[in-house]
Length: 377
Image 1 (cartoon, rainbow, N blue to C red):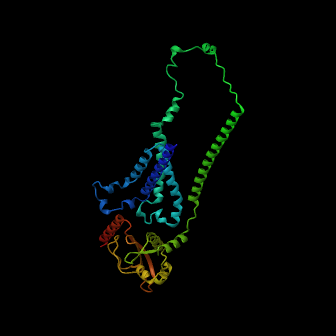
Image 2: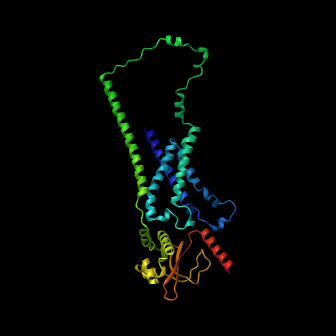
Image 3: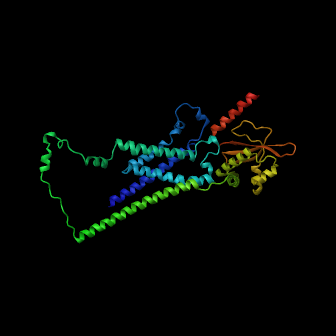
């Protein structure tokens, strides 16, 4: 009994270890750039390096999961239980992230690569491949011992089928048949049989109840995933307007935007640029639209700093535009540039410029600006 308990505890630990591996697998599928950030220097290096292994990051958590499975029995049970646990958690979290923190689901900028939406597709494909390999191909190539024993139950030795010892139909018909056994049950035996029937009914009921609960849970999860209310375009814009003003103070007391704020700022500025939301507005009206009048003067003046700024994604700034709003978390930066009408000072055009999000994308755009400048010079 004690050995059986220890075996169950060890299986639980293997399952938890495999769950960590499955979570790491989904993370490597979804956010590989956070593990090995893009580097323009390493992009041009032809020699083998750690950067070359970036497309194979997912192999590491798979090996961890495989070690957890091989450490004991019920390998497939541990493997698929862990995979489906993380899949269920991802499907539960996905609509919440999509509604409140969409930068984890879809890339803020197209060049940022895969996020959870793409990683989840890779993860489901990996589960499908696991089913084909582990439950079909490997099960056929290396059948389990109990399956082999089941196959050997109907095995008939070749000596029994030896033609030299064959009998005719008449000999088989003339063979004396043993009388079929007849069992007489007492009242005590009937009580035992009745108790056994009750136990079997309870087991069947529990099995059906567990199956129904599992099916109901899967159905509820799918309904949650498909029908969780998502914000409208206006609600999403208002969410980002509130979120983009969040900031934190460094040890030196310098305010910086939070990670969520800089992503929200990028979405707000892109909306302004795409829809020309500031066209015809005065700078004061644009500030009110952004809600900057609610901020302390020190923070507002920092966000509205219009001094020339050198960005990693461009080599020079245009003389016909000025910096209107700048939000940064210390590494990533979003700048909203505007062009104004010299006659009345109202805004004509708004443009979003970003930098620090992806070093390779910054270098590519900087070179492109240089090439265009050389071509039109």
